[in-house]
Image 1: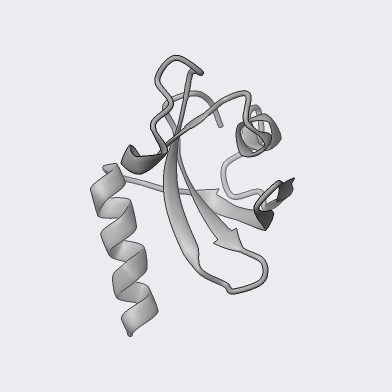
Image 2: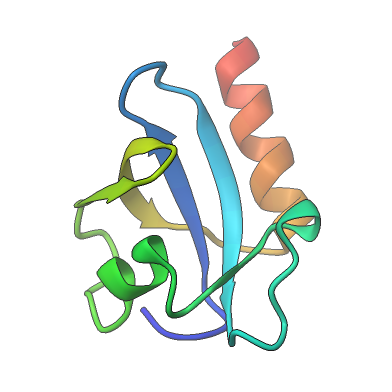
Length: 86
């Protein structure tokens, strides 16, 4: 995984999935789904192979990164929300 890739985070406590794009520290904007490559999640996933599950501890909780997302950020989020509703 590298800068510009979209990742799906799964909250270890609730199972909720969230989609983010890994960006440089200059482009960070959490409300737009952009997290830094130097954040705990960014550091944990950079350089990892697609499909490899990664566990990350952050100040707000523990997450797993089950896979790299495909398509646009909006498509990523919509597809995961739809899967949760099925």
